Length: 234
Image (cartoon, rainbow, N blue to C red; front, side):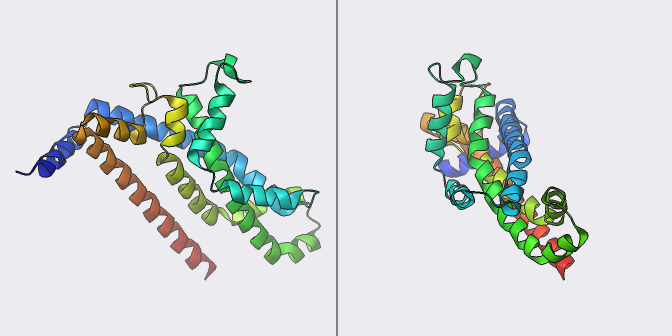
C-alpha cells in the first residue's frame, strides 16, 4: 500500500476514534475563533453602522482605513499585538502573551475591520433606500442604527461567517502571540505546520481534513443564507 494512502487511513482512524490530542486542538481552535468573531461583531457592526450614518471630519479617512485594514497581513497584526502584550509593551504586566486571550486579540485585530467595513457598505445601501421614510418618521440616527442592522441581518450573518473563516484559518498571527504551546495555545493551523515539520503526517492530515470541512461548511452556510435573503427580497 502506498505511503500516502496509509497516512490517509491513519488520519481517518484518528478522526473516527475521536483522538484526544486531535479533538483538544480542534476544540481550542473553535473556542478561540468563536470568541474572536463574536467580540469583533459586537464592536464592528455598530462601528460600521455609525460610520455609515454619521458625517464627521475625517470620515473619508476612516472609511479608507477600514477598507485597507481588510487586507491587513496577519504577521503585521501578530507583530502589533506581540509588541502590545510583551513585557516591554504597555499591556505587558497583564501577562497575556502566549495565552489563548492573546490569540483572540490577534484574531479580533484581523476580523474587526472586515466586519466593520462590510457592514458600513450594507448599512449605507439600506440608508439610501429608507432615508425618506426615516425623515418622515422623524427618526434620529441613533434610532436608525438598530433598525438598519436588523434589516441587514442576513447579509451581516454572511459577513460574520466570512470573518469566522478568516479567523479559523489564521496561522501567522496566532503563532506569534500564542507560541503554539501544546495543550495551551496549539490550534489547528499551527498544529498542522508543526506536525508536518515533525513528520507526523497522520495528525497533520487529520487536522487538515477538519479544517477543510469547516471551511466548506462555512461557505455552504453563507450560500444558503444568501439564497434565503434573495428569496426574501424577491
